[in-house]
Length: 397
Image 1: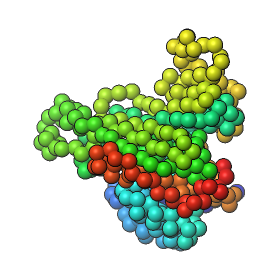
Image 2: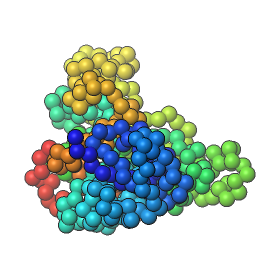
Image 3: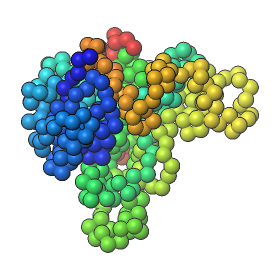
Image 4: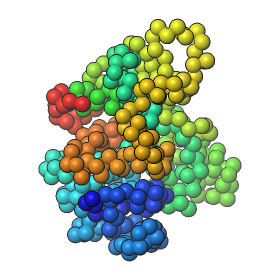
């Protein structure tokens, strides 16, 4: 079995975990070089590889050096948000296929640059959005494509995750979220919620996003948390966080559907992605893990039906998960990290298009830049670029 020689950029908590748990266990991946801005993380990456298979790989703090090495055929990018697009473009220009960890874009212009780099080089690039591979999201996608929910009218998603500790300890953890929450006010992490919805609505494949409007609440959660839990941190106690505690974004589509996204990461709460699909014949709601189909006679007993998603899984699990459960679930985040990484690698070995391509990447990531503009304009609607230049009308699923 031929292995692809990969370089890995970004060895923080996320990158280091993926290297150890996923990449070192993939039969078609051979890690040949690792990179991080911090030398201690580089050494940790080298140690992870050596412990796994006895090899001593090359390590560097220079990402461009890694990209251009002769023993690197493809690249995984797990670094800070700000670096994702520039590094992905550099990889494509160097003819190195690239898998890019999720995050939002900083401008619409850099999303166009991403598209242009692909169109000029035809080097594969994939956004590694693991939530598109979650068992329930794929089950619902399967049900949608079988017509069980009828014509889809509205979808919702959220990234609702209490990250107050991670953000507040950004300096100690050397984590990029802190500087972003201090400086930006936007839907800064859109792809977890939007990716599965885009698949349901066939975005860039017969449908597209048309307009966006975003609204942000005031910022209060981080200041209260820091004052209560980090009273000696004079730098952050009185800091002004630009990022609103709750950001609500509405997107309209060419097919007439509406989408509501929620970013909620700086107030106390349970985790949820709020994945919801509404159609003319039924719905699915992630918060209660519930399917409701028109005519099932249970409208008046709706609370009793909470959690019935499990009952539908046996019949409607996606083929990806049927096979996965049969072979054995692997890796982190309930197995979805393995699925997304493996699908990218398989697309390279099988010479097929990336399942989440550069046009998806640009369309999903640019939500951050567009929402930042809309919020600054008081929630005014802004136009969504068509990164396919009209090809969405002809593209098929």
